[in-house]
Amino acid sequence: MMKLYGIPNCDTVKKARAWLTAHGVNYEFHDYKKQGADAALLAKWMTKAGWEKVINRQGQTWRKLSEAEKAQVNDAASAIQLAQDKPSVLKRPAFEHKGKLILGFNETEYQAIFGEKA
Image 1 (cartoon, rainbow, N blue to C red):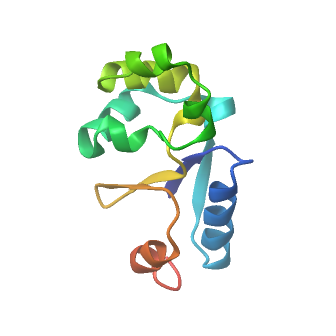
Image 2 (cartoon, rainbow, N blue to C red):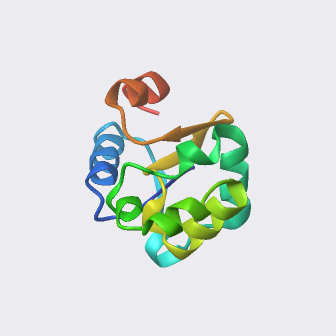
Image 3 (cartoon, rainbow, N blue to C red):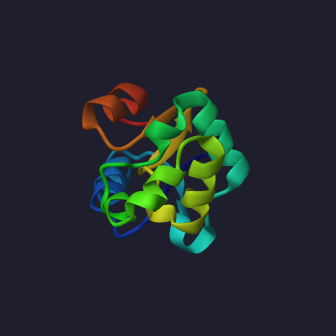
């Protein structure tokens, strides 16, 4: 079963979950706020996609950081530390499919991955 990572009150996560449910895709939801962000998993994702893609630098959590805090995030290790301290800074939702990391929600991409039904 697929594991979808995110935060339940995030609008993008809500859209992704609604789409998955409507298309009969079974998944387990991992709530970053309650269950945290696993450092080993984040390191794996950052190796695949780069820390710059895994960290949502357009999001509200990133924008609220001080310039000094932002400047300290300059590699995967510092990005992982930030994500563990403030999991809302992670791009979401996130899941792995056939070895590929999928970040965010794009209906066309989901359709290509899952078709009408998983």
